[in-house]
Length: 383
Image (cartoon, rainbow, N blue to C red; front, side, top):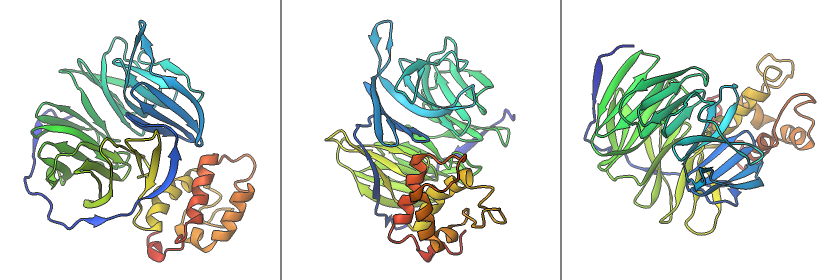
């Protein structure tokens, strides 16, 4: 890896593009208040607040668990995410008391700091993207790109980190260190008063950084940070192909370099991203957290939500030239055969016996098919 440091200068000009408005659609609601994170693996969703967590299986509550205790002292959750564990499985992991804890599908909590190769470490932050995970520690940071092989880099405390498939970011004081494994390079971003950061498209080769500061929101564009909003965000994160931030009582979304206003949120609301591109929003009143979809067209929704399921569950039988006849990896097939697909999904005859399709994914497919404008021709040329 190149040891020379590259300086990326933050541009000062704010975007002058007009802001479009998107109308979000509520697609899921859970009876739990999210203060820290909403994390999902398959049909299992865990909603974290500071003092505990609620585990749900396909929307049904499995159990409520308190935050872990350490030497008789009650801890508080401060972060949570999905990581690839050393067994190759995807784990839901939370951070509490500078230690890492796995939350299982049957609402149990297991201390896993040592199992993850971090014996004796004080964990301050962590983030993941696919199989890549970075742990911010009191004495530097550790990272893995496969969930098994861990590399430790000693240094100053790393209290804020972000992960992408091929890149890691570590924020300290007035700079952000960017480690790029694909290019074997290390760059330094000099930026004052940064408060938050996240990678958009974190699981792809096109991952780019979104940074919140006291002076506004900055987006990584062609190797430099450019200001796209002039108001300091109170919250900021990523949701798959979209970045998002809260400022002036509104959620704004960044996608393909464009900025859109989405929805107003009440004071005290908390917002969290989902890998599919949706947002979870918890209001300041009743303990309810709602998931919103905000696709600009049904084709966008198909690409973000349906295609990943078809690629994982329907191939190789239902791809072009496959033995199943219909090519379910193309959105046009879903539009042309809407009634037929709805019938076999509702009747449980597809996929055939021996092939897995979790109830949560079946419900996702049926929800898209039930959309009034699922035959939107906007995607005809984009399969």
